[in-house]
Every structure is written in C-alpha cells, then in structure tokens.
Image (cartoon, rainbow, N blue to C red):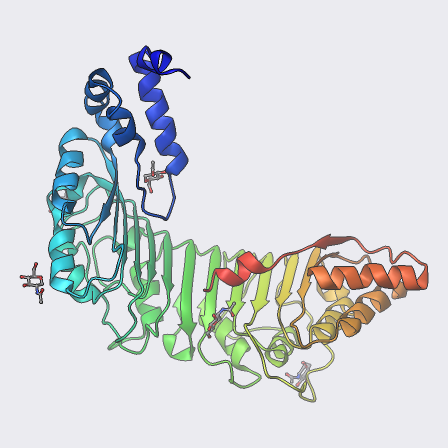
Length: 430
Ligand SMILES: *[C@@H]1O[C@H](CO)[C@@H](O)[C@H](O)[C@H]1NC(C)=O
Ligand SMILES: *[C@@H]1O[C@H](CO)[C@@H](O)[C@H](O)[C@H]1NC(C)=O
Ligand SMILES: *[C@@H]1O[C@H](CO)[C@@H](O)[C@H](O)[C@H]1NC(C)=O
Ligand SMILES: *[C@@H]1O[C@H](CO)[C@@H](O)[C@H](O)[C@H]1NC(C)=O
Ligand SMILES: *[C@@H]1O[C@H](CO)[C@@H](O)[C@H](O)[C@H]1NC(C)=O
C-alpha cells in the first residue's frame, strides 16, 4: 500500500486492522516489542485519535516487571481501556534480584484486578514475597491464571491468592509454585495443572491429594508432578483428564498398581503417566481389579519414561492374563520409551480378547531396545491372524524397520501403520 492509501483508510478499517494484528500475536510467549496499537497510532494524528478512542484496543496488556516505565505504560492502558475486561501478562525479561521491587511493580495491577479475565505471571523469584499483593484481593472476573516461577532454589510453601474471592476462576496452570487451600473459589475450579518442584513435601496436616480432592470436586483436568503414595487417595467424580509424573522411578513391581488405586475417578477418559517401568505395567495388566478404583470410562492410556535402567522382567508377571479387563473401554494404548516394549507389545497382541475395543497401539521404543525385537513382535502378531489387530502408530525408525522387513521378505505385513512423533507428549512433562 502506498502511504497516501494508508492515510485514507476509513476509521472502521483501521480499527479492524489493528485488532487483527493483536489477534495474530495472541498467545505468544515472547515479549511483544511492537504492539499494533502503538505502531499504528504513531502514523498520524487522526490514527492516534481513532485508536486511543477505542478502549477495546487497549485490553491486552503485556508488562515487563524489570522496566522502570512499567507504571506509566500500565496506567496508560488502564485509562485507555476504560472499563473493559483485560488480559494481563507480567514477566521478568531478565532476572531481578530484588524481590520486594518485583512485588512493588506487580502491585500496579491490584486496583484493576476486578477487570482482569486472564492473568499470566512469568518470574524467577520467591513467590511468597512477589505474589503478596495478590493475597487478599477479590479478582471477581478472573477466569484463567497462569504463573510460572523458574526459581527453584528453595522449597516454597503454598502461596495464598485471592482470599477475598475469584468467583469466575476455572483454570489454574502453575509451575514452581502451588496454591494455598482452602480458598473460596476452589470448589468451582475445573482445570488444575501443578508442575515442577517437589510440591508435596512441605504440605502439613492431611495429604495434598485429599486436600485437592475435597477442595476442588469439580476438576475435569488435573496435572500433577511428582506423585507418590503419600499424596493420599483422591476421589474426583468429574475428572476426565489426568496427567501425573511419578516421583520415585525405583519403586517395586506393585507401585503402579498402588498409584492407580489412589485415583478414584470413575469418569476418567485419558490417563498419562510419566515414570513407569515395564515390570510395573505388566503387574498392572495382570490384575483383574483394584480395591478402591475402577476405570469404566477410560479410553486412552499412556505410559512414558525419560530413561529406564530395568534389565529384567521378574518371574510370575507373564503372560498378561487379566480377565475381566481392568479397562473395558480402552481404545488407545501408548508405550513411550518404555523398556521391554517388544515384550509388552507381544503380551498385549497375544491377549487381544482382553482388550475388546483397542483400536490404536502406539509404540516408541527407547534408544537401547533393539528395533528388530519390536519388529518381530508385530510381524508375528500379523502372521498369527487370530484377531483383528489395532492400528499401529510407530516411531519413525521403527516404521522404517517394518518397511525394510516387508522388502526383505517380499511380503506385505498387512499392518495398518501410521507415523508417530512423541516429542509433544514428552514435552508436556518438561
Ligand atoms: C529493593 O526494592 C525496594 C522496593 O522498591 C527498595 O526499597 C529497596 O531499596 C531495594 N533494595 C535494593 C538492595 O536495591
Ligand atoms: C483473554 O483471556 C481469555 C480467557 O482466558 C481468552 O479466552 C482470550 O482468548 C484472551 N484474549 C486474548 C486476546 O488474549
Ligand atoms: C467479590 O466481588 C464480587 C463481585 O463484585 C462480589 O459479588 C463479592 O461479594 C466480592 N467478595 C468479597 C468477599 O468481597
Ligand atoms: C518425567 O518425570 C521425571 C521425574 O520423575 C522428569 O525428570 C522427567 O523430565 C519427566 N518427563 C518425562 C518425559 O519423562
Ligand atoms: C498374575 O495374575 C495371576 C492370576 O491372577 C496371579 O496368580 C499372579 O500372581 C499374577 N502375577 C503377578 C506378578 O502379579
């Protein structure tokens, strides 16, 4: 566009262009240097007046806690947005050593907290000090709260937030800190993600799990790091998605079974567990029931581990022989970097009558496992032809190995295969 054409843009079109520019940047995690409302309002006097007079264009606020001009910029947005609802991001662009200073900077949002719908805070500081300004306020329009603290030098006690209310709050995503309960808004929470840190050790009194379950009965989505049996039993009637990371990978064969039995979540649809071992999975699959839990709605189950040092399968856990099935509706099973993948896969494929609706088996063997073994397990299952096999989603090198095998044998396996990249799945626990 020539500059003359730009200058003749009608007001409505100008506003639409600025709003579209903001939408493009939505969700971006990086600090936004050139916000469209700034760039466009600097073109000429008319543009400035039009944009400054549109409160809706000043509702996405992204502030650098390190900046000396934070208060000025914040107040400009607060004024220009008039009474509109706001989405606010506060971040430390570089490490600030003075936590009281960060708290003072952050407190600039407090007088407007009732207008904030989404609050994201990215910091590296002692959360007890820095988040103190948010402790006793009433965030009456807040729906979504994300706080990521990258400082893990010391264990922190749970942080009290919005003790005067947050009646609309449904989503909490936290890393490196945990919320303090009880709070009046906990009962309505539907989404809780607590990542990073050894968060259970500092809890006093009753176990954390029991606290979460009793305080947040509406949870549909729960993600917890570092779960061990001291978390206690959790009764979560609405829970559909559960992601957990186990804290002690060296536990005994029955550990996974014990962990499953902690979650009384009859509506659970998707369960992902990080830190599992092949022997524990086999003991689980070999069980016919759990004393306290059942998973009648579970359709997707994923086991994943970073690295595993297992070198043998204990006697007595073979073969997988559970009946009736623990997971009658399971349609997708994923084994990511699990040692003895070939053994687990062969076990499942030779007992398909116990997996009545299994449609997908995802296999990403660890680097140490010979691909040939996994390939053999699948090849043999195809040749036994006793059952309809599930679709296989395979890690690239394993898929390539299967293709090579077909060429070598000059025979199609007849498998239904698809490429699978586990990167995203692995990163959710990072
Ligand atoms: C830390 O910040 C507070 C509040 O801004 C200030 O009063 C104090 O002097 C600062 N301390 C240091 C060591 O800079
Ligand atoms: C503002 O926050 C709400 C609630 O989390 C979200 O749905 C919406 O997409 C956000 N809008 C922008 C422009 O970031
Ligand atoms: C918080 O604000 C909401 C909305 O203004 C109000 O209904 C509620 O009573 C307030 N809570 C407290 C404890 O002041
Ligand atoms: C799993 O949990 C361990 C800690 O138990 C952690 O170090 C690792 O990053 C997590 N992620 C994956 C993909 O294993
Ligand atoms: C596997 O299941 C069978 C039959 O219930 C049982 O006898 C056996 O002890 C189980 N093995 C293990 C290691 O749990």
